Image: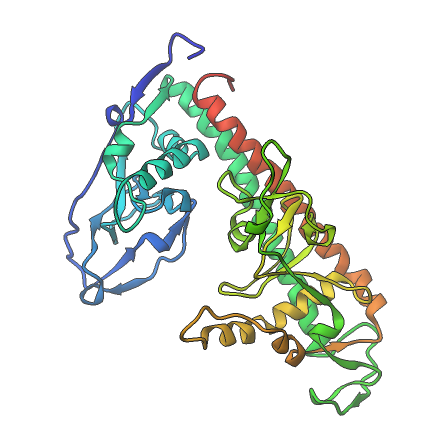
Length: 396
């Protein structure tokens, strides 16, 4: 430690695992399982009938408790309870970790959810025998924690929380921009209140459409390049590499656990910021990539077009995504996926006014991408500073 007033303690000295069985004094409560939280987010706050809840719905929680999944720590199934939780109960698969007076709950939470801690806990989980990579509170209790005075803990908490608040604000702004762009797209291509609308309509295979507009399938407005089986392209020892971009990376970004591929793959399979990516197998995702250079894995399409702007392709993919998802979910014996034939069946409207539309919607999409890049940069800064703050290497 860099300062004499810091201590290094075992986590068992500053927190404990709590397993209080809920009183079940109401017919309806809010139940949280491992899948209902992720990286600080609660996905629902819905009441359910107690009599219909699964057997693992047992534990009570309270404000300032930390919820942490015992299974696969690297998946980020954790959250801090920052609200009154009298009506909540959680699964026995979630550790309920409660700080004592020596540590601020948020400081402990930042320590437990740092990349370094979760990576180590994942390593421990994978080292044990069992059906799933799993930890117990004993693994948490044995962690070494850098512990400064409460005032210093508060400064660290305030600093990291400010970065988290900026990340969340950016995400909310991005969601608002996305909603605006979606609303504009609907006005133009569903309600036909587009720039320069004349009201003249003609028959088409999609019903009445504005005169001069054409109907084209998705695979005629864009090219869909499938990725490579990148396990066949490992980097040579000491060679620079590209992170392999799979569905997981589309959702969570590149991490230390991302696979690696040789940089000497064909150029067309290398993706970079602003590229439009569509995962066509299993969990369907359409997104603009903002994680830097990477190698495109199989089950992902890189979507490009020589004739139409990427926002046009993006919103038509989103327009058809619900139908694609139904196709995927209809598969019963194998993992569902989209075939190229489905792209040929997904029809789009191509307007005459594409230039005027581009001037309206492209700045919104550009702003969305810039905000995502800024958010990623702040998140990387946060993750880089957190361990240095928590071992006293730098001060705030």
